[in-house]
Amino acid sequence: MLAGVSADYYIRLEQGRDQHPSLQVLDALARALQLDENATAHLHGLAQPPTQRRRRSSRPEQAPAAITELIMSWPTTPAYVFGRYLDVLAANPVASALAPWFAVGENLVKGAFLDPRRRELRPDWERSLTGIVAALRANVGADIDDPRLTELVGELSLRSEEFRQLWARHDAMPKGSGTSVMSHPQVGRLELSYSKLPIPDTDRQTLSIYHAAPGSPSERALALLATTTVAEREPDRTLRS
Image 1 (cartoon, one colour):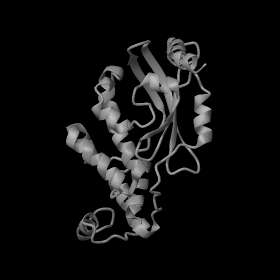
Image 2 (tube, rainbow, N blue to C red):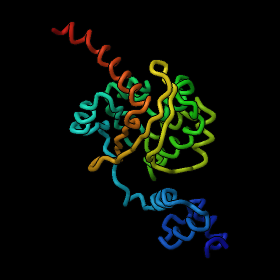
Image 3 (cartoon, rainbow, N blue to C red):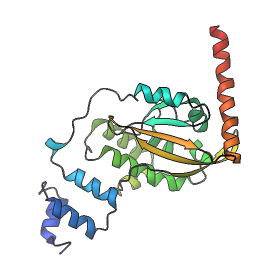
Image 4 (cartoon, rainbow, N blue to C red):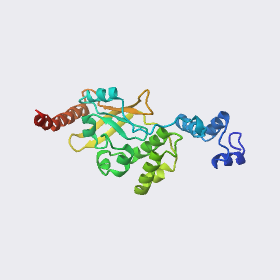
């Protein structure tokens, strides 16, 4: 018996032969499997009948214009918006200068596994891989048959053994807040705090913000990095004038 559920019934759940378990059964299974809050929420999402799941729009994801304008007004604070598949939908210049995959059109999961520059930029890059795969699974929820997700997971599974192994673990945890250490090729070591803030009235879009402690070497390095982005844009303004 597992959490008051017979072995036969548990096997039926695993095989998908019972697709409508009660909330009490799901909570009992979560306790027995020692799932945390995020994993328990993911379990409940998977058990929802398809008719209760929100329909996804076929239109390309776009960051809210107001959020894009806001982050573009932060010259020394790296910030970007990512969507439900962890595609970057908006990014300010200092974010793109901080990491090449923090740029519109890039995918954070692909950057983590397929861009060799990540290993040079992030000393703890291997530890961060687990978190980004868990974040992707948490973001897409129960929509495991979503064509965009299928394409993304298929490509990464073919190109990365590490991704294939981590995806098979079924970890689910939204990206939260913490500290990141980077070894930047232009400004050296950066120790930055980051926050991931859900954007209201969007389909799981998230605002990601990095900042350094006031008066720290990392704050000065970020300011220096910001000046390089200004210098790179100056020729464009000269040509237009």
